[in-house]
Structures are given as C-alpha cells and as structure tokens.
Length: 326
Image 1: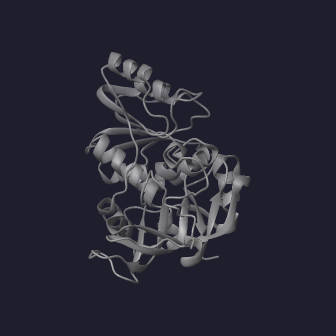
Image 2: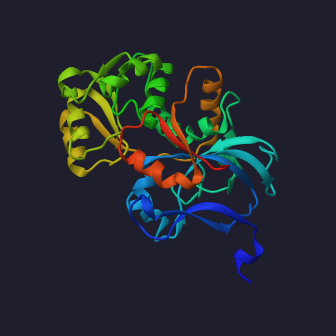
Image 3: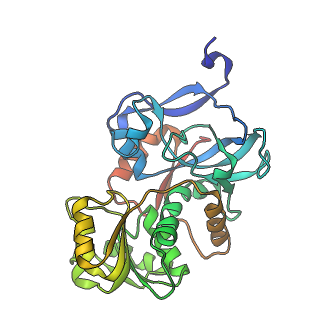
C-alpha cells in the first residue's frame, strides 16, 4: 500500500521540474508524520526568500535537494499539532516559528511540516503568524553573520549592503542593538525608513560608488555578492586593516580571498544554520520593541509563483509571505 493511501493529505506548492515561477503548482501530497524528537507543525504562514527562487531555477540549494519534485520553503510560523516521543520543550498548541532542516528540504510551502523540536522557538507574542514567518531565515542570517562570524562589537563600524532587504533590515537593527555605527547601501527612497531602524549613514548606490563614500570599516556584510558589480571585491577597500568581509550570496572565490589577504583583511563565506536558541533571543528583542519586522505583502498559498516573480525583481522592502491558511 502506498504512503499516499495511508497518510492524510495536505495542500502544498510543489515543483516537478526546474524553471521559472510557472513550475510552481498547488497539489495534494501526503502529510508528514513526526519521528521521535520531532514535532508536527500546522503551518499558518511561510516566508519567501531569495534562496527559494534560486533553488527553483537550479541554483541555491538545488544541489542539496537533488532532482525535483520537491517542496520549497524554509521559513515557518504555525502551531504544534503533535509531538513525537522525547519532546519536552514544546507541547501541542504552542505557537512556534523556525527555519527547520536548512539546507535540506523543509517543505514550508505546505499545510504541515515536521522537524526536530529544538529547531523551533516560541513565536514572538507581539507578532501574528505572517510577520513571524518573515523572521527566521533572514533574521538568523543577519544575527549569525554579525555575531558568530564577524564578532561585531560595540563601537565598531559596519557596512551593510542591500540594507533594505529581508536580511538587511534585520542586520541594521541587530548591528545597532550591538552598539555598532551602522552604514547601509540602499536606494534613496528607502533611506528615511532605514534611519528609523537605526542606520547612522546611508549611501544611494545608484548615485555614487559606495567605496568612494565610506572607509575605515570593521565589518562588511555583503548581501549582494561578487557578481556583475563586483560588490565584494570593491568592498575590500572600505575595510580597515584586520577587518572582515562576510560574503553571503556568492561565497568567497580564491581570487577574492587572495585580494583580501593582500590588503591585510579577511573574507569569509557564510551559510545560515537552524538555531532555535538564537530565534528565542531574537523573539525577545522583537517583543521588547528593539527589532521590528517589515512585511511588504502577504499572498495566498496558490500565488506562490507571483511571490517569486515579485521577489526576483529585487525591489522588495522587507519580506514577502505566503498565507498557508487561505
């Protein structure tokens, strides 16, 4: 007897082949069952991230997931429906959020997910599920990169590229919370908003070359990468001796590492990890009013393709979220 016949069904956004947003479709698939130490979470909302559409196209985490079919998404906010044997930190009915399994498949674009209980944290009480679903991957990326990788300290100067994006707007707030002097790159239209989040200096990258405007930086958080504009390479010149560049999207090529060494600075690649305790800390900052969450729009699950189209335009302020209950 097949699993589809023995397991309850659920709605999910699946893709059977790599390609554009049009490959995403809603289908009925078997509901997962929690193993020992895992919880079954009824998903209320799922965040949409750049890694999602990159993976859909064959980049991102496609090499980890293998060939389709699969279910995209890692950002989850929902309610614990069942707990597996050995789970003591959560109980049925708890509202939780998390970034389970990354970079393995989590299947967040679905009505249910299962994952180890300690990859979740209790949802910030001040947030609804759509806002909470916008937090995990972006906020953990910013938090871990600044605290664990860069070791950002009070009084240091940090340059954050793409400061108005999903990761960037959290990074601005975390860096300010840590006592840093925060410099961000973003289009001028977003400068006033970023100042309310704590940015001390802002550079319109469409009007000037950022490396001509800023220097003596301790940490560069590069959320753009060393693509056509060579943002990572150009950022090396803004660092003071001993400073560090954390390159998130494209990693560190040997040429970049060599160029960094020649300047007496460091270049580090970075990939986010599931981190329930860090999410609990981030939730405390959110509930205390020290960190705000920006959601540009919430779309129903069956508009996942439209969410990808909009996200790929690269003009989103904050995050896009899927409402899995609609």
